[in-house]
Image (cartoon, rainbow, N blue to C red; front, side):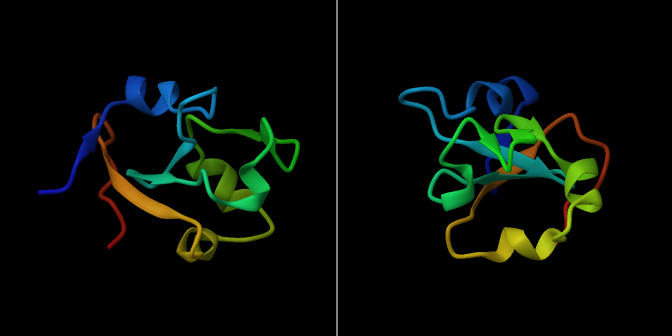
Length: 87
C-alpha cells in the first residue's frame, strides 16, 4: 500500500532546515529535495515547496514530464484530494 500524505504534512515538508522539499501534482506527492532547481527557497522565483502545484505545472513551460526526472522521487498519495492519481 502506498503511503498517504495529508495536506498538513505536505505543507510541513517545505525544505526548511531538516525537512525535505515535497510538492504535489494530480494527487501524488513528490520529493524534489535533490533537484537543482529546488535548492533555493523558490523554484524559478515562482513556486514554494510544500504545496500542491497541479495548476502551476499545467501552466508551466514544462509539463508533468518534469516529474519523471531522476532527482524526483514519488513519496505517496495526497489524501483529501478528489482527483485520481496518475499512474
